[in-house]
Length: 241
Ligand code: PGA
Image (cartoon, rainbow, N blue to C red; front, side):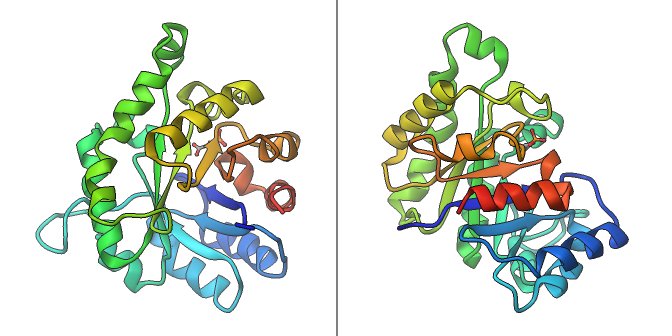
C-alpha cells in the first residue's frame, strides 16, 4: 500500500526558536504517513539539521525557475538539494496571485526540481467565482496541461504529485466538501493518469483530517495554518496513517 503524504506549509511564519521547538517535538513522533515540513528558506538548513536521522523530510515553499547564476534573491533547485531538502512546493496559489506565477513559470520550476532529483508538489486550484461559474474543472485542466510536456520526458508519479487547493478554502476555515474533493481528485487523475498522487489542501485541521483522508482519490494533504501547531499537525499525521 502506498503511504499517504502529509506536507506542512509554514508559509512566511516561524523563527529559529519556534522551528527548533516544533521540530524537536516532531522528531520524537512516528507516523504511518510520509510527513514533511516546508519552512521559509532561511530556516531550511536548521530544519534539515533538526530532523536529521528521523523519517521526516524538509521541503521548500518555492524554487527558482532558473539555474544558478545572476538572479539576485533567487534560490535554485540545486541549492535546495545541497542543503538537504527532498521536495519543493511549486505554484502555490499565493505565489500565483502575489508574485504573478503563470502556468509556464510553474512548469519551468518543476523542470528544475526534477533535474536535480527533488520531488515536486504542484499546486492547482480554482477561485470561488470560477467554481460558481461552473469553470472549476476547466481551470484545473488548463493548469495541468503544460505538465504533459514533462511527463512525456519521463516525469512519472514517483517524481511529482499535484495538490488540489481550492483558493476559496485556503486559510478561510472552510474546507471543500467531501463530494467536491472526491470529484476534483477524480478529474485530476483523469487528466494526468490515476497513478499520480493528488493531495488536498485548504483548511485541513485536526478536526476534519480523518474525514478528508478517507475520501476516495485523496493521497494526502497539504496543511497550512494547522502545521504551525505541533499538536494539531500530529493529529493530522496520525489521521493519515
Ligand atoms: P490552510 O493553507 O491549511 O491554512 O488553509 C493551505 C495551504 O495554503 O497550503
